[in-house]
Length: 164
Image 1 (cartoon, helix red, strand yellow):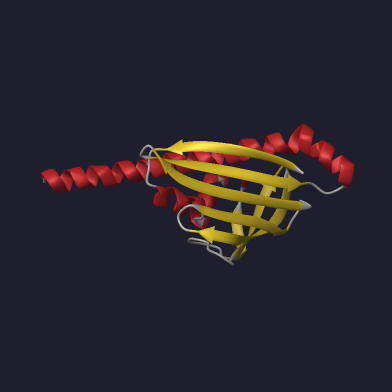
Image 2 (cartoon, helix red, strand yellow; image 1 turned 90 degrees about the vertical axis):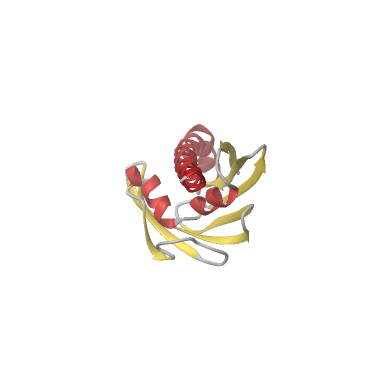
């Protein structure tokens, strides 16, 4: 099994970050360069416990589909999505959120295994871990930017209302 962890500090409320991470429409926008789109199951809005989504996307030059299900959910601190159908032998993504010092710390932990036994393990260590990490780091930065923009807009609206 291959794994990696990404920790992202976000100057925004935990609920905003949590909801962006499970927002199908935002997911599509944040990965638009892969052509990723939801084609079955929950195809828009906020995904929740027991729901699944089938994504179609172009990764590594190949169009493929991956279905994942939300198997654990504790608003606004944790959810887990697990691949139920797709190119990997197994794939699980834990999303953790906590408030620390007025910021949200978002931690993504991914554990996966490519098919083809030892050959797949070699591909994971040499290439796939880095590819997936870069893909997810880009998504984490998109969540950070959007959440901080939303938080800034809310703060400006409060300031205007207080001084208006």
